[in-house]
Structures are given as structure tokens and as C-alpha cells.
Image (cartoon, rainbow, N blue to C red; front, side, top):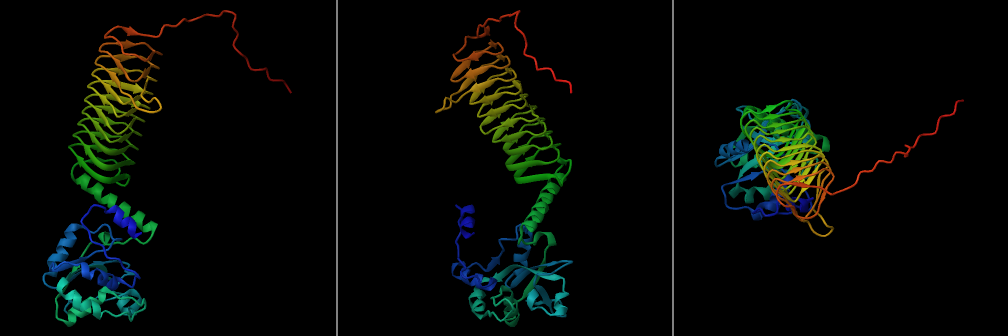
Length: 402
């Protein structure tokens, strides 16, 4: 999976060292040694420990000073972790791995997280001295503690919260840490004054910036960069991605909004879909089963039922009736529909782009508009309604009696 790591971090100013074969953590640092700078300290982290906080690492670096510091934690069940060994005075003297520990050492609850801050200048001397006479036949980074004690280099232990040092070794553990992360993020939002109806049913997969008195119902998913203005309300089961929501706007349940700018005091949903490139001005209403894509919609306009508006510019105070669609794709290219201010569009209307519906126009129900309209007046497709008096409605055959 190394190539996936490089791809995920593409563009960052990083230098890579490959460990092959993989002969333990000490061996891994040996491979990195030629790439290390002359910085006083080298900070060793682990890719499967995602929740460690920056504040914890800063405390570790401060504790190291000109010596060595190891991050520790107290666990009720330390099974599987290396144990921290201390002198009678409490100083760290070594680390013993689970498989190499005695029965007495396994009862120690203070564990090694593997995260260390080490004096860079001493690594070139210490790393070649590591041996592999252990149950795993590996070169342990933890053996550097004993070398530091031998050389009278100060060794500090810095305690971390147990939750931030947990590693991921299975999909179950991954799910467990994901929930822990979501709870941390939920707690931060609650502290900032956001109302979460149920913090345990909340998912933030990016960054969220909230104004005052924001209300979020259950089972909502937020991805990318999200901005929620003062008094915004997000109904249950909504999915928002890279979206700005204006002050006082209400998103009703089961709505999906992706890459959109939603103005103040709007009403969206339920079951609305707003796609990338959409900009809604203030007091816009988008109702149930309405889809909007790459469109600009002006103040006070409404599309309340079962409509599709794509690649369109819609003016102020426009009403779009149920079942209306913009026919914006000719099979090869997209074309734009322009609907000017104060237009009223009836139900079941097709607007065949490129087309402009001029200011103040009313479009009758069931009309197909394929050419630009003049301002004002009524647009309809003339048709004749017939009455056939002799016509009989089909009937189902009568059921036979048994």
C-alpha cells in the first residue's frame, strides 16, 4: 500500500524511505536515517495511530529537551503493548515487548505508544547497536531507551489520553476510532454552541464552520468544507458536501447538497438535490424532488415540486411549476436557459435550451418553449380538446362464481 500513501500525500514536500524487508521499528528508522535533517530532535510517529493530538506531540518535544522522550498511556487492558519499565525513583529505564515480558512485567498498565522524540545526533551511533535477540527476531526501536540510559541521556515519559494513542489493526478497530473521532468533533461543536440532536449520530468528514444557534438533526453527513450561517437548520438524514448555507436557511430532511452556495432564509427540501455550481440567492424555495444543477437562482424564486433546473439563470420572484424541466443537453453539448425576473411557469413545462423566457412572462401548463419569448403575456402551445360522447371506458372481465 505504499504507493497509495504517496498518492494521498502528493504535492506535499516529503521525502520517502522504503523499508524492505520489514524487520521491525528500529530497522525502519535505520532506513530513514540517511534522510534525516540536522534538527535537534527526530519525532517518530506511526501511520496507524490517527487520533494523536498536536498538543500532545508538542508536550513530548518539550519534555525531550536535549534528551529522549517517549509517549505513554495507562490502559485497563494493556494486552499487546510494550510495557514501560521504571526505576524506584520513577525514571524510565526501558521498554519490554509483550512477547518478551515476564509475568510480573505483563501486570504493568503503563504502556509504550511507540511515539518518541529522540536526539537526532545520537541516532547514527545508537541504531547500529540494536540487536534482534527477541521473540520476533526484529530490531526494536524501544531498545534505544536502554542505550540512552547507558549513555546517561535523560529519558522522559509523557502521558497521553488512552483514546488518542489507539492503533488500527482491523476494520473493527477502524470503525471504533472513527466513532471516537466523530465524538471529538461533535463535542467541539457542542462547546461552540451548535445544537446536535444526537451527537452519536453525526458524521463530519472535513471541516465545518458554524455561526450562532445552528441546529443539526440526526444522521447527517458533512463532507469537505462546510459553512453554516447563524440560525441555519439541517434536517435529519441530509448530506452536505463543500457547501455554504446562509443565515436562517432551513434544509429539510433527506436533502443532498453538493458544491453549492445557498443564501439566507432559504427553504430547501425535503428530498431536494442541489448539485455543483448552483448559487441560490436569499429566500429561495426548493421543494421536494427538485433537482438543480449549475444554476443561479435569484431572490425569492421558487421551484416547489418535482422539477429539474440545469445550466440555467433564473431571475427574481420566479415561480417554477411542478414537473417543469430545462432540456439543456442535445446529446453532444449543454446549453443555457435564461428565465428573467417575475416569470411564472406552469406545471409540466419543457424549456428547450438555448432559450430565454423574458421578464414578466407567464408560460401555460404543458407548454414546450423552444424559442425566445417576448416580455409579458402568455405563452402556450395551442391545442384542441375533444369530447367523444360514444367512447366507452375499458372494463375488467367479470369474475366467474365458483
